Image (tube, rainbow, N blue to C red):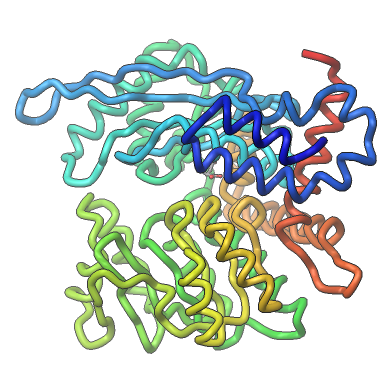
Length: 447
Ligand code: GLU
């Protein structure tokens, strides 16, 4: 494999699909050396096959808003790779959703799911629907219209979507309800992130954030350090940031900033339980404004419009909202402010220049596909529970999640340890995830 040749071909074939091209380049650059030691990969054209999804469904979603007006959106499902299991990955509802975004997310999902060691293929989907300002009834009608198109192509052994940005428990509930009505069967494993009581798993809502903090704790301990008193900055205030804040506080750390599209909310004394609970209220309001936190807790929080979390001094920075949210200049500011660790909880949260700057400064950098894998891992555990018609206790789920994250960390160290003893977590995660998929594809023949 020659990365530059492959990338030139992809750029010609998929011009302007910048996020997709960025995600592919990063993986290929980190696996190139090892790949070229495996003639069986080259013979089976593993890379050429892996970079293109198995298929993409693209469909119109039509629904009626509260004023009785007809609305038209675009929906997608990218079924990327099924070498390890049925397609698995979230749905993103956001006005900026397009094919490039979902292809990058689906591509990342293949390796993330592989790292969990669970039998999960990779996929992603969503729509350019903007949940901000929508009523609950509008969200329900949109979710129903979306599933009306997609339902034949999902199922526990085919493709199992879940949540992502803009899709949480409420949306999954509406989608599962419609799926069940159309399919005329209670195939709970067709969607994950369901509520507890009708197929959902305990700890699934918290899982991405909990898993991320288990991984971060390893990064910190690798340096002979502890989580106690560490100042953490998060971005966003959605499900991921909520779970991460909960676990960070439990581990003795202090969350000193969260953010929103409107600005940053600084919390100098650290986030409290009441504030963490209020994050859920803010999400349910569909207002998407972090200023609401500062208004609710005046004196404890300080809101600054237009600023990002990365302007706040911290020990550990965790992008946890959207792709490319950490730019090179943000990374430089974090470094200047003495950041000790950076761990992405969002998918591809950092721009390539930011990762380079952080790594060049000798600061450990954890990539999203390893750090945030606890979410999809717990979706995998939800499917296990659905298949055995049983609910595990919260302790059982958390124990499994913890063990999966420990193993992901160990794989990253194994494949990412450099000659000087430091760890390139990006290379470790990509290589460990990639090898398992490549070996499965070779074993399953040219299909
Ligand atoms: N959207 C999440 C992710 O990026 C979860 C996917 C899932 O649970 O299927 O991994």
